[in-house]
Image (cartoon, rainbow, N blue to C red; front, side, top):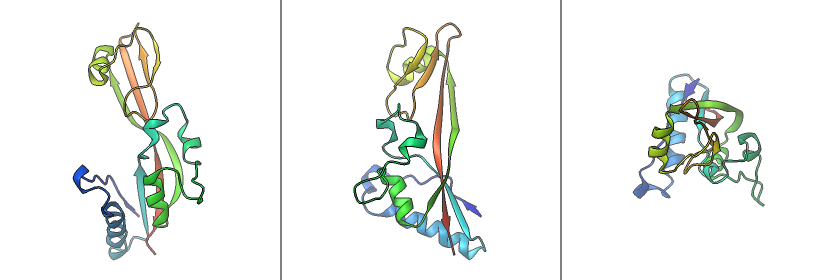
Length: 146
């Protein structure tokens, strides 16, 4: 099995089909080295617009043509991948309340969950402990290299 770590396309190069080509090339590299499966942790492109919707529900959203609502999930699906599972705790970002206020350019006046820019889920703020915690989910997708 081969595991993709990240595909990042420079903004000026987006929309040229590079991500599909990169996934295809990763699959080829795996096959060339006797690996029949490529797994990829995927951060859905539009999920940050729906931070209150659980990832498990979000990945079930489909367009009228039956394909995934999310463009990055749709790209993987178009290349033959299937969703293996949601990793509910793929990344953990702790910080003080002050750090979170600086990072987000927001004020957190009381303890609670806050929707912050570009986050897939709310950040949890605990004023009494001076802690903020963001735990981001992702989606594991499996590509057959056979």
